[in-house]
Image 1 (cartoon, helix red, strand yellow):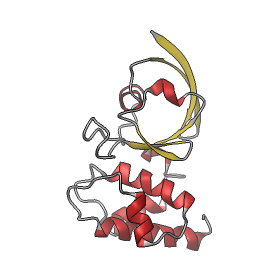
Image 2 (cartoon, one colour):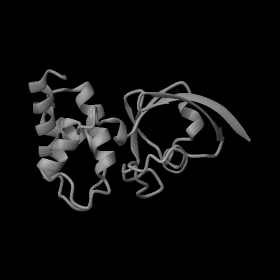
Image 3 (tube, one colour):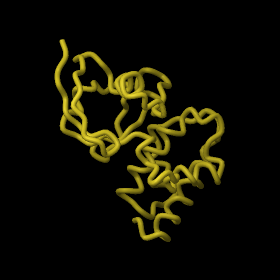
Length: 160
């Protein structure tokens, strides 16, 4: 059985019929073609599928699509503005916070939620904010540096 659900995805209002069992990650990737969100573990353990729902990091592999009705969903594709990279995306590129890149979209989205709440985080706050996201490649130091770079860039540009 499908339900008509209204929500906003990356700033675009939508109304879609979704089945009660359809997960948000499958809806985003298969139905809307937003393939930046990655399926890592399929069990809520790695954070690769993290998206923002009303600004909060949410694991899309565990969230039914119908559960986000009347909410704002932001995916990695929704961060860029006017064709340019968001400072977090730029920071992950410049500071080598991404190696294989599989965890990167979830990491960036968790970092976005952190910086929205804590614009000038300490290293410990960054580690805590990203604690639900696993990376198997970088060792995390470059990820922390990427978030610090983005925080400084946001502050410098007055986007904080």
